Image (cartoon, rainbow, N blue to C red):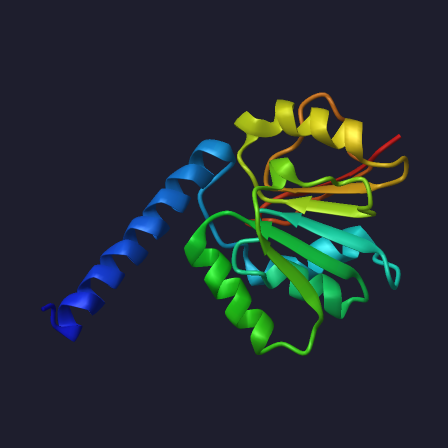
Length: 175
């Protein structure tokens, strides 16, 4: 017969294993979780110029800060995350927030983006060629794309938000 302590130990090992597996999966698919600077949320919102009811998607939403801020600005905000730890943090933030957001434990590569008015991401540039194809194929004309830190090669930004000693933010519009 196993003791309750042994059972807890096994559960902790399984949880750690799941966190590590999803972490490595997210690294292979896009990026590992690197939190966005809270000071930059307002900069992203200023670029987005959210109108009430617009669909705002955060690809790899991490801890959920960005989608909560977008919802507060009037967007129907939805985030997608495949790494367990940041997903749990985002869900906890969602519980304690008054904002209505959707946070899905899902690989954004498998999400249809066609309803999005604004797509935000903080991802590594090595996936940008594949991401550009997805965005071009799925987004409607006029949809905004906001890239945090790195520009999208071959796309001309509509606006660039550059602040001394802060990450650069790029706004694009789908033609």
